[in-house]
Length: 79
Image (cartoon, rainbow, N blue to C red):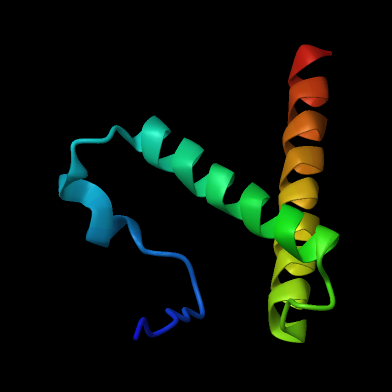
């Protein structure tokens, strides 16, 4: 019998530093995992635990806020 793996947060960088991946590759993999989780929770919300749906929504909102702040900084420096 396979036991389901449940985690409350993403793997920390310390745990994956020795895998031969660069920081950029790790970040790309992390983003890919999040996008997959987001797609699953959006396409099958009836099967996703409410905590997973809320996690995805909060993380996506935080990512959009960081992007907005980054774009604001770029526009200030471009002027």
